[in-house]
Length: 409
Image 1 (cartoon, rainbow, N blue to C red):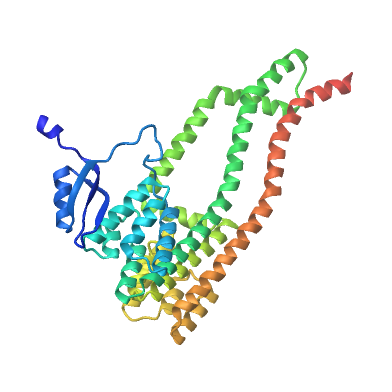
Image 2 (cartoon, rainbow, N blue to C red):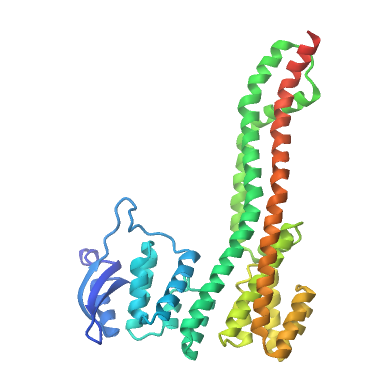
């Protein structure tokens, strides 16, 4: 037991000399210092100093933070810019890592840098971290390395990620705003019914006589909520947990949910346009990088963000693999508008499919922007009216008996 206790595990910082005699350093995960040194020697690095990485105190600047898609996007753009300026790849990684404000991203980039110094290609080094660098990212980088156009591919990849994140953000904001207002309205209404209405109720009991129907309804609703508030909130919490678990674990539930969402008025149309934009942008980016169409569609099927479209694209991929034209497969799927089918058909006939797909993506991204702006403009007065009716209705119901007494006097 004592022997095992002496074996450190976790992250280690190291310093050493590479094959060219240059000093290098980085961070590596491992079970012990001895194993870290052995791994460094395997990579052609002579270890000089290896020590356990200290844990940050009180969650300071070195605290572990989640690596977001935005972090990866910024990294892709910075690396492309560095390479355009003629900075060597390894040095680019070190500069980008030191300049990043996310410690977790710094550690990840240094790990990738050490793998590259050990002889791995950039694509191979990135593929060791699938949670941060997805199949699309790794495939495009590998294609760029093989074709000798890594710098251009990184710029294209960064543009793709920036546009994808922008459209995701637009769609999320369009859906989040009304949901947030509904939640606030529910909470405010519950507070009024549980804490405010009872104060009026005790005052009404002193008045005597029959309450107006609207006031009586609010009082009855208040009494019901006071008696069962824990049950109501408990059901809401349990329902939220169950929905989350189903979404994480049930493909059938996700398929049903995706179908329902696409059929929603206004919101469904925005989501459909965003899916088509993502499909076109991803396929255009991969096809332009020289990735074969079948392989590109395999990646696209997992990135559109909707199981209905994802399954249809997987079927299209199998049909394209048998020699059918992409346009024919898309028409058989019955999910794409005629304009998209016509532009893809022209792209296939003229040999400019990637350019046509990029134009489709630009068009639908602009459509999503306009639709979200229009939806926000439409929702603002509707939401204000909704809140006014709910909150104003409660206030009027509470003051009706007082107005009635004033009229009698």
